[in-house]
Image (cartoon, rainbow over all chains, first blue to last red; front, side, top):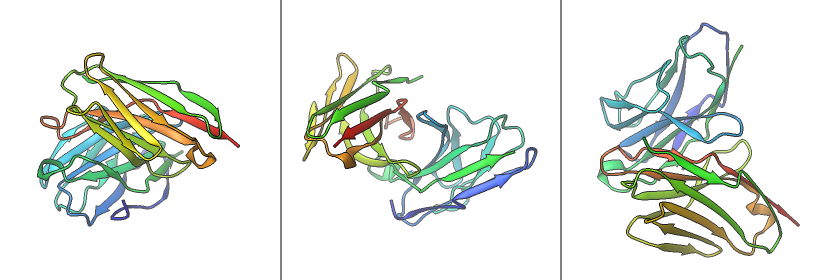
Length: 114
Length: 114
């Protein structure tokens, strides 16, 4: 899991602003995922990507957007359309179709919107 | 879609006792079941996983069992230690046609008292 980085660790934004969370991995993994975690709850899938230039919506994609222009990078944009964006955001990656589906997580970004 | 239920939500044990956490899943096509440990403010860490062609897997003090007929799987921790205190999440995935996306349970907060 040391090969997955997320930045920044803490992020503060005003309501109505879009914000982009970074996720980079040097594990040569094909698949990448974004999850949201709220206090006392499990992780919920926002978006995932199995290969470059392709991604699919997860269970709670509304108000979020992603891109996958490079294998190593899978940034998540939280738009002003997301009703309750304050949460802990976790990025993960796995070998995916190339092999194992074991997912390894980055350290997370804690986003606070006021 | 897939749904994963996890019980109990909190579990308190004395050091040295065993702890058992149970999960049920709804999609009979699920074939991969990982368990994650998350310490406060940290990323989830994969501790053990099991695939649908195996009924039980052990790794030192940790074991996971799977009952495909009943669609439930369990995490067993023996000889618990204070450092086992954390939130544990189960998850289920259908790896071959859904990009390996994980559906998580709600989590179990385990407290091991010295």
